[in-house]
Image (tube, rainbow, N blue to C red):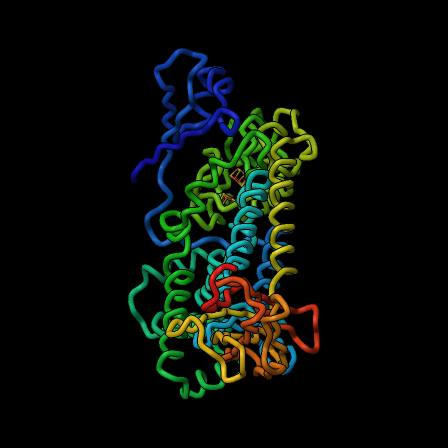
Length: 502
Ligand code: SF4
Ligand code: SF4
């Protein structure tokens, strides 16, 4: 079995140097499976380093755990999964409320349509979401991983099916080793069938954000979907099946970048899943109600058996820990059986363990992160409020800068206006110009544009020769929504003539 090195900063050390420096007997018995190495540095610079066994490289079968934290996790997961699957079925103004239409390059979100030009807004949404995740990590550790991450949610659902069909942890281990009989074959077939159906439904749910949901489900389950829809549903189904069915903790341990860098955000006030070694050691088995000098850990190993990443939290904080709280529920159950106080394993911070817990309201980091998030939300709101529902692009006629108009005594310039109606309703617009009074449009310019359409609108501006004093005059085109005059966009251009400076 291979070892890994765990660099445990002193504020998160489950076996602080002071404890290691206790009696030799305690030192030897409390952490018999560890190999503590203290770097050869000056005593005040020592960083405790421990070598602990890597989690099992074999297939991990976890014990199902019940308890308040697992109920909370299951409820949150159920809510998030229901939201993910059902949101595409919400209708708004006769169309799917949230839909990424790649073919039309539009993103519908309730009454608003976002275009590729609006993707700065989406970028802000993602940046703000990432920042909120970091903010939560600083104070509450990896609660995202344990309670909200889709990888964790789907893995637990797949494990639930596995448990229902193949039995508990021991039965699953036995089934792995059993020869291939009809019974084993039928159990495996049923499990993989359930996994496959769940994976295909997940693939449909994902693709339904890009293809209208109702038609999608009908076409996929009736095998009438187009080749591309079939491909993407199959792709996401395969990813789900492999991630949640086969890879599970391997994704967290070896593929997820967040798992690797989250610990740099931790400090002494971060709440992590912590084994209280001062209370638990010396660990050891005993009978209920037996008087003993041992610590509270009865070495039942339940905290390891229920861990979805296969680690032993008694070794201290490890990057594999996804903060799911299963070991907390398991340990509290054991503490209850032996009549000990709960909380041998609990969510706590190093400062709290040393009775130096600070309120987050006294934390400068909390204030700084909080302010940064508020500023981001304000910027995002301003961006949303200033979004234009009309897109205008003015192109000058490059062939001829100007020409003599058929109207006596006038020059004329021609332009091509590209106007897009970014709303979800057909809209009527008026085109006007802001310019000196001797430049004007020969007639009223009003146009109707269908929802989401862009039109190319050629337009001519006339200039009175007798009044023009410059060769180049700045003008501004305005496009106004006739039903909502507040919605207006403009773009600057130039009017040219043969006139030289007078
Ligand atoms: S150590 Fe505990 S909280 Fe961490 S992943 Fe394992 S069971 Fe979940
Ligand atoms: S569940 Fe609690 S008592 Fe049992 S081994 Fe883990 S820490 Fe010790």
